[in-house]
Amino acid sequence: MQKIKHTLLFLVAMLFFNVAFGQVQQDTLKNTDPSLNGQYEFMLRKSKSLYGARLINPTRLSALWKSVNDTLKKERKQLQQARQEIKSQAGNISSLKGEVNGKESSLANANAAVNEIKFLGIAFDKGTYNTIVWAIIIVLAIGFAFVIFQSGKLKHEAKYRTELYQEVADEFQAHKVKAKDKEMRLARELQDERNKWDERGGR
Image (cartoon, rainbow, N blue to C red; front, side):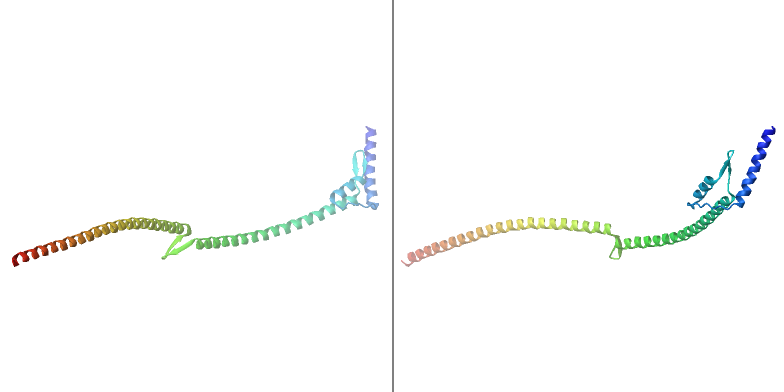
C-alpha cells in the first residue's frame, strides 16, 4: 500500500514537472502539415507517454485549439456566405420561373394564334379548318365527277337521238323523193290520159 502511494506521488510529481517544463521550454520543432489532422498527429507524435498517459505540450495544444477556432470561424463565415448566395439564387430562380411562366404563356398564345384561322368572321382551329376544306373539296370533286358522268351519259343519249333523227330525216327525204317521183309519174300518166282523151274527142 505504501509502495502504491509512493508510485502515485511520483507520477503526479512527474506530471507537474512535465507541464511546468513544457510551459517554460519553447517549442522549437516545426510541423510541415498545417491542416488540423496534421497538427493533431504532430502533437500526438511529439508527446511523451507515461504509464499509458500522454503528456501534451501546452503550446502545441494551444496552437491546435487556435487552428480549430480559426477553421470554425472560416467555415461559419463560408456557411453564412453560402446561405446568402443560396437565398440570392433562390430569389433569382423565383424571378426566372416567373419569366419562364410568362414566356410559356406568350408561347401558348402565339401557338394558339398560329393554329387559329378566321373564315367569314368565325375562328377555326387549323386542323378543323383543314378537315372542313378537304371535306368541301371531296364533295365538289364527287359532284364534278357526277356531272361529268351525267354529261357523258346525256352526250351519248343526244348522239343516239341525233342519229335516230338523221335516220328518220333520211327516210322522210327518201319517202319525199319517192312521193315526188310517184306524183310526177302519176301526173305524166294523167297527162297522157288527157292527151289520149283529147285525141279521141277530136276525132
